Length: 303
Image 1 (cartoon, rainbow, N blue to C red):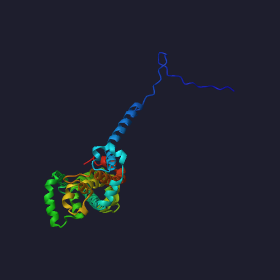
Image 2: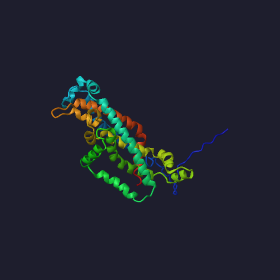
Image 3: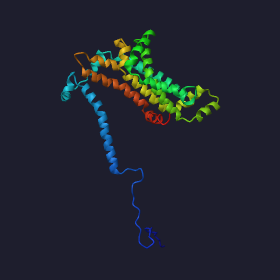
Image 4: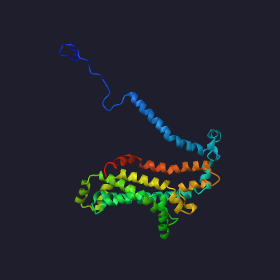
């Protein structure tokens, strides 16, 4: 029983000569090994640059003396966690933590609710002056803090909200809501209007359509608005130092200033406190990170 083999020959030109076989090259959009090596190297260097300040802060927090930052090499032989022990036991750290969490979470919740409803109303409803309304929100961001401090203090004083959590939350909302309203309006513009019409066909009210159909689709935008509101309230100093008079109601940003006096600065304790302060922000970022990139990109496509 004979077997036959089939050989595939190379293509032949019209003149009878053998045509060159096509070379295997990189596909379109596919990078070469050298390019991948360079890109990975750049990313590694950028990551190290970004992590260096954090690592340096942690390193300085392990030095027992306030002047160790002047001679960081000496810290290696005397590393200790005494700074963290002092901050947790001898300062009002947990009072600052309570105030910060109440103010930041309150600002985040109230700010996101107001900005989401505002952005949805401007995106979907055409009421008189809706365009000017958004520009008015934008204009409010033009005034510096120094200009707003005195009138806000007078208003809060008349409302008896000085040195209160609610007063500081309302002040922070005046900062976060305008930006987040623009952000949410741009994100709602990317959601098809047919979804609202489908909700009306099913008998939903406008608020029911917003709550049951639109908000689940707007989670990335809500995550960005929440993250911005959280960071704004968490790190703000001027308003918190002016409107919160009791040392037990300081936020973290104001509490850090207690380590600096006219003639002294306990930088080792400041570094340890800063490391502890970073924990809540890192935890909040971990919970919203999945939606941050999507929300940041989609929110700027329209509007």
